Image (cartoon, rainbow, N blue to C red; front, side, top):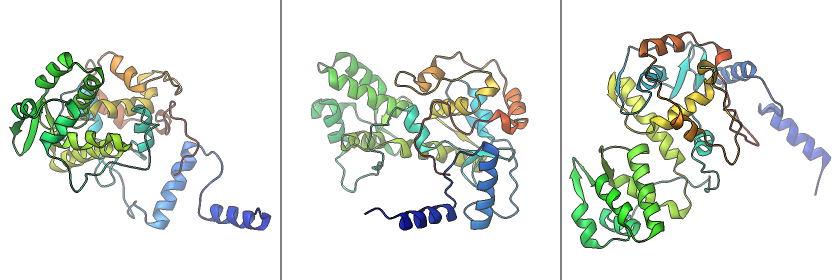
Length: 303
């Protein structure tokens, strides 16, 4: 039963907890967020001032390598976010779900490795619909991991008699070679665990984000390292928030608009040196950074 008194109390409690029922500009949100963090001790340490660490040597086999290497220098492993002067920004689950068009996947059921999982052989048989003899002959050992060469899967995609399985094998290859690339040119066993769970309607986005943050943290702390996966997704996110730097206008999200496709189709930016990108990042002003990607439309955003 509706009660005006209870509704008033409910709204008062919400306001007292700091959930604002109105739109705020970027500066006001940042001020409110920093104040709340200091008062509630959520994450921002007392007296903490963001500053660049020593230069980190990062190896990457993707397009826009100068941009990515420079961007990685501004990754703050203490708080797992990018820090540009007084502005902190980080990819979110909602943004990556929009980029990957995972909106219809069950958002509250994230991937986690099951306790009892089938063997690598059984999972590959289930995904490819190939015989045990064929799968066993393709499995290789790369270090501590079992893998299957991409070349073997490519040949299977071209020759497989089942159209749906062609798509499954191709999708498995993309997830392994782009998102979770460990052994270059090979599909790793761990990826088949994730792929085997897709029919349970799990979302891979938190796992993809974790595999984006993990190597960035490791490289920044060690001062060197290699980031082999998720770079194109991260660059898509970057361009969507920093489009004013590139003087490129991005479209509003629609059923036909694909931000990932747009960034892949754009010309490579290797004509801009790493030193130039570093200078751009070091001189960024708050007005150059968009707090929300223009293609991301949400009913509610919680700060």
